[in-house]
Image 1: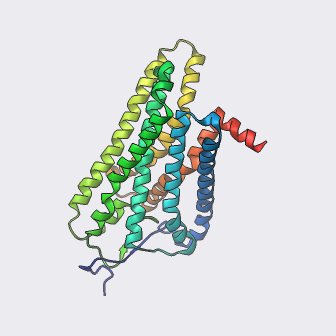
Image 2: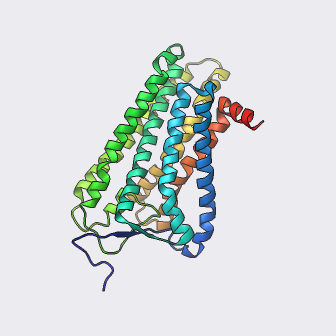
Image 3: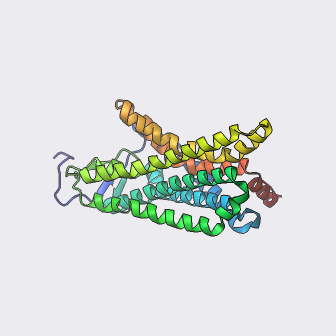
Length: 309
């Protein structure tokens, strides 16, 4: 009997995939993945702990950084269980409810991170454009309210995803392309009409792209201000305050743009490349953001050195 027989009642299990063609080496691949997850979770927990306990870090910029660390932590914890099960234990099965829940959390925390990066770009612009009014514009109370509103909007935005997937009919044996569940990956396995999923997924992706557009506009305006500064030292000082955020934006968006380009212009590209880039999207931002901010932020660096000494 074919594994692709359909069922009007749907299915109860999806099957995840590691890296195609290197299944024999999944155990060795799991070692760096475990290390990356450990460093990411410890790093983001450290950032959250320092910002909570150190009064010198009770500033709007660092409150936004704590939101970024929280979304990175959520992203790591959301994908950790299935990735380790696939690579470490070769356990590929996942129930449909667990799969839909995982894709909700992955897309939700990704949307939160994208929104936080946008607010951080606006924060940098205001700090550079009008430094005298910065503290009155970006008050801690406004930052917290902004974070709450953004988180609520992101949850409402991705909340329909699991329910839209539950109404679809799938093959009895549905094999996913990754070691975790994504809406677009699950959706394309359905044999019933999924046009609503495609349209809504496109709208959500478009909103994420709009965040990147607004971030780019913010930095164009910042660059215009920087070019108006006469001293070379002054320009470098201003740009240095943006360096960590620019790194975070590149780390988050480069894998997304690369994947989109592969799907659009390189449809015959190796599946291994797509899987690795997708894994980079989930693994690298939570790993690198705490490291970048700890190295480039003098206040955080001083606090860490003080704690260690």
